[in-house]
Image (cartoon, rainbow, N blue to C red; front, side):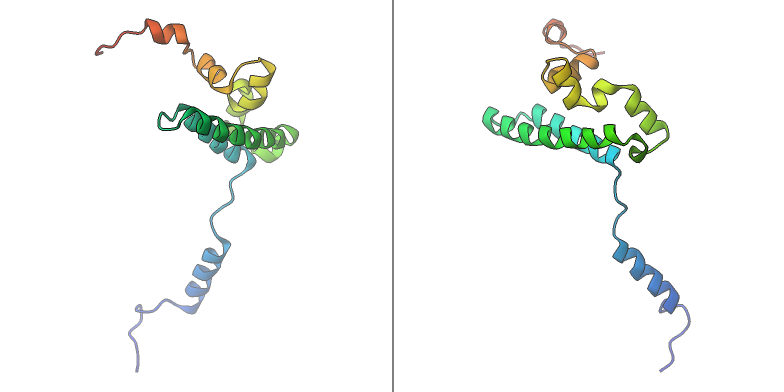
Length: 132
């Protein structure tokens, strides 16, 4: 039985598709992994659904992973990548290397994060609810 052209892909196209699927997704670099772990830590710290004990346990585990990732990026900056993202990451040490900076400044990671963003407890307490 003869099949019309275009119904089944050519063998080379099938081989290329199989190779692409076997390769899997592109691996994230150390800087992207660091940013993802930092976001996970902040998400855990700000999650109102967690009870304090669970929040602390999750945050401690996340901080340990974050410290390891920060060390990897700090030890080998060229491996972290180049370009605007890497330049911005290294330009703002406190936000990029949150675990190290929080230890150096003797602050909790969330306090340091909020401080660098210009948010403090005093400012939150002084804020008024309203429309803009």
